[in-house]
Amino acid sequence: MASLNHIGIAVQNLPELKRLFSLLGLETGHIEPVPDQGVVTHFLPLPVVQGHLELLEVTDPAGTVAKFLAKRGPGIHHLSFLLGRGELDGLTERLKAEGYRLIYDQARPGAHQMRINFIHPASASGILIEIMEPAH
Image 1: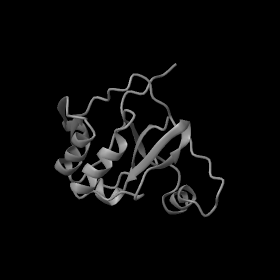
Image 2: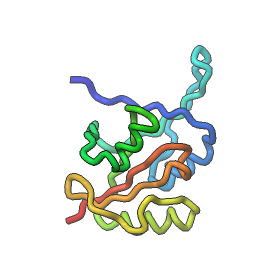
Image 3: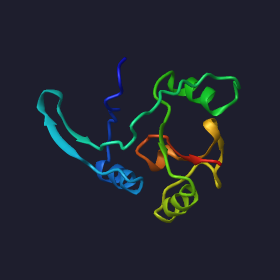
């Protein structure tokens, strides 16, 4: 069975994205130039031992994922970060105080008995970032 090694994200404003990921508890662990590819890679280790690929099947043609597909086509929709129980509201307030735009004013129910919110792509270098915590 294959295991996920990393998710590559092309960035235009590296310091801003690193600042956001730092608020989520992720710091750069390794930096390496790759001259053949014309990039410098910045790896931020993920503390999750086991993750998932979430395949989003549209059931509402007017929903946000249906709109995403119509505008951008299939591909990566969002990155999701799991927080400890009771951490979502505090992080949400800290993100707002730091000037980040969130999709929802308050957390909403999500899959797997989670409370969720999203950091708007306009505040995250074009990446939709989900933050979630166990609801119970």
